[in-house]
Image (cartoon, rainbow, N blue to C red; front, side):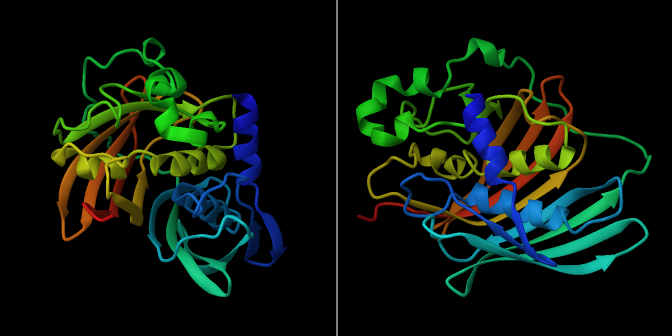
Length: 285
């Protein structure tokens, strides 16, 4: 799947149009809306390209999904350089289509500084990701049900530790774990690795919010969409190495669901924390 990863790299390689203004394209997939992880990843690329201080890396981002993105036209990213301090830089990015904001992101960048170190440990006893089936192997029984999406190239290799979303329907749970990584080799640029993980972090987390009801994104009458997304980058990682994404459902109610995720390296280092709220309308047809 190196070709799919190369396409993802191109997708995240924005075209500079003017100072603080960038243009991003969408994939050729026949989607109703632009994948939220794509917009978040591209916005982080735009913000990062305006940070000139060497070694100043993103440590947090907070974003809102305002309108569905149109995959048939480019997305403009306008960056506001809010602050450049001695140790921190702050950027605001607005994604625009059809003259309207579809997404906004605020990101903070920090110089690498020494300090005490503590983290919550990863869950123990997780199976080796190489021992788990990839997406096509896992979803083969549901190929006809999934339709054309089954054969789409996948730049992110996602492997469920437990049951997948379709086979676990009817079995309530509040947690899931997946292994993920880029399905090929990435360049060494740490900014690109952060943007790829930002892209991937939106792939399974919202599903967790309906698991307490034994439901999934495929359940009849289900309507799901990302509303806001927050990430904190704690320690170095590579997005083309295996990462364990531990996810838990925090609250679901009022047609909204909130889930938290912790992304660990294969040797148990906490790399990224994620919290996402999304629309979870259940039972509508």
